[in-house]
Amino acid sequence: MTHRIRIADSDHAFDAEEGESVIDAALRAGLMLPYSCRSGTCGTCMGDVVEGSIAYPDGLPPAIDSQQDSAGKALFCQARPASDLVIRVAEVRDAGDIRPRRLPARVEHIEECAPDVRRLFLKLPRDKRLPFLAGQYIDFLLRGGQRRSFSLANAPHDDERLELHIRHLPGGVFSGHVFNDMREGALLRFEGPLGNFFLREDSDRPMILMGGGTGFAPIKGIIEHALYIGVDRPMHIYWGARARQDLYLDHLPREWAEQHPHITYTPVLSEPAESDGWTGATGFVHRQVVEDHPGLGGFDVYMSGPPPMINAARQAFTDAGLPADRLYYDSFEAAP
Ligand code: FES
Image 1 (cartoon, protein in one colour):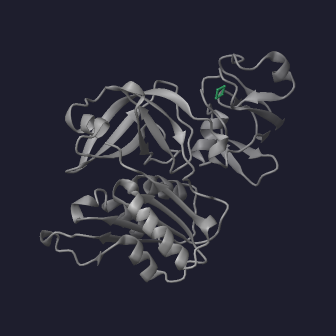
Image 2 (image 1 turned 90 degrees about the vertical axis):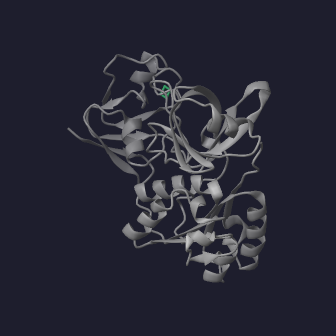
């Protein structure tokens, strides 16, 4: 039996299937409520049951006592609705609402998608999930205190495993490991989620989303999240790369654009190979954006890529009328 859950003082509501926890049902609906351990031990997911009743199939979880329970408090990672509910809980709206954690993860799968790009899929320990906002990144924690940052390419509702896009850098400590000797099942440690690059859901302006190289990764996460929660604002995706083979998941944005009339996709190559037979846009990707949209005053712009691209684009977009507070970007310096 399905139960309807409404969040007090908000216009958000969602359905929970029989036996589904409130947090799981919210995530399935594309809503982010606070959580961390998802096993009833940390208390992060605590909120109030304003109307209706809940049940804990395995008894009262460790992070709530009977006094809190009787006062109407609940741990929503464990609570199952026993009726329709009205709950009071602070929705996660900002990166500052999620505390980064250090977690282990196993390499579940490595996929070659271009000669110098691998997709890395990570599995967290059983019962652990990573709450994050679409577009954020994680830091791998390496020996000697070194860190390497990579954007999450999956959307938060699709959190069975984490997806990262790794470009091979000559002499790269981590990317060299991924390309040369990393095996499926290997154990890694990371800290996350990190960063302020995420979809602002409270805007109704059309969006431009521009990725350079593996800067496509967080753009992918943002688009998948936006489609999942039903964002119908126009979205124009630009992907800048050197040659055709560097558009390593080109079929994805093409499919989004084919299936959704509010999505447009423009790939732009800076150095197409002759064998590419390329007839599409060429040059610097940010220049193509301004050529297509000479007035950016009414847009929100999201961009992710290497610093030279980001810096050139910031200037060009500001000159085209984009207010600085509507430009969201993730500039990643590739560290070897
Ligand atoms: Fe830790 Fe619910 S998320 S107790």
